[in-house]
Image 1 (tube, rainbow, N blue to C red):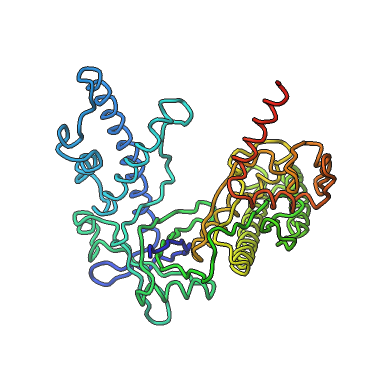
Image 2 (cartoon, rainbow, N blue to C red):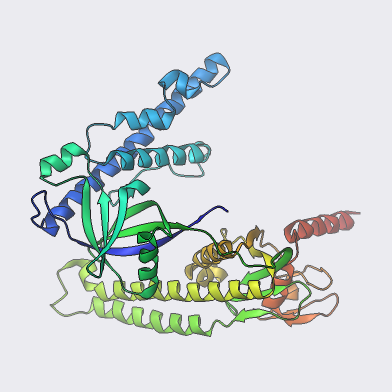
Length: 439
């Protein structure tokens, strides 16, 4: 069975010593990390430049020879190997990290190249606050004296010799704030969990470095799941989640009162703080907008933490319900196109985040996730299939104009979403209706 990857965010405190065992001041380590960050940005942008140059060469070659060149014939390497060879010298980044980073950038370029050429995506340009990419072999977690430590290989030999460090590793103490994080780290130390490529990230607001540690584990698949049994999941405002199996009167619902109450309270507080910022006393005036609005940023952090906590809770409850119902498949609407004014809160609440949490929790249990086109799923009667926007006159109620079926609108939508290939069924029904109208 293929292992799954998950991420845990670890706050780090510098605990580094030089080759003689003397502590290195954290400010010196931070300065070094920022230098590596600047080198990372430069290498990534230079890699994109090399990719474009080869792409242009390849296009010209095709015009003359009516076939594209093979990378190894021209460069003597694959493109990512050629690019990596360019950066073997001239920077301080640990070689495995640099190689992993350039491979990722080349892959991203190839994946997005057609979108660049169509003009549907901006050309990649890496900004200053770049994470430091870490190869999985560059990360070592240790437990000693009741604390966890992360040792990260960040430097090439010339760099750590120049700085007077013992080797390429820089040591950090890990801040463990909860039992879940402690359990993950214990399992990494005991090699129950594997460690995958990760990132070292600087948070400007908190003025602290964090390790986004990616760990790998075998998923705990649930037994007795039926892949043909689909749980339809409707995400909305009245009910953040409403889920049901087609034809089943039972439903899983989460009321939106918790979110709405928090949103009203926080938005009111945020507005009040913005007004205070405009009329604040001398203590905060004259130090720029960031200082005057610092309390507002704190509110935004609260919103992010609340959203993360609630989405974890909601997604876990939904997956537990799917397992209880023995559903091997979950179908959800593809919400990537939400832009309408009426869906502003739906978009702001980050249902993408909720869907991603549902997705990885489903994978842990061996449940397949299928995304469908959301068009007309809320206007279609789940009893007779009649589609009409007048079927749903309010946010919460559904009344079919053809057969008279009445139900909660979110439940009706979840029933539709729980039908296999529902988007294709709707498309065929609409096409048939158009042909009938024409005739």
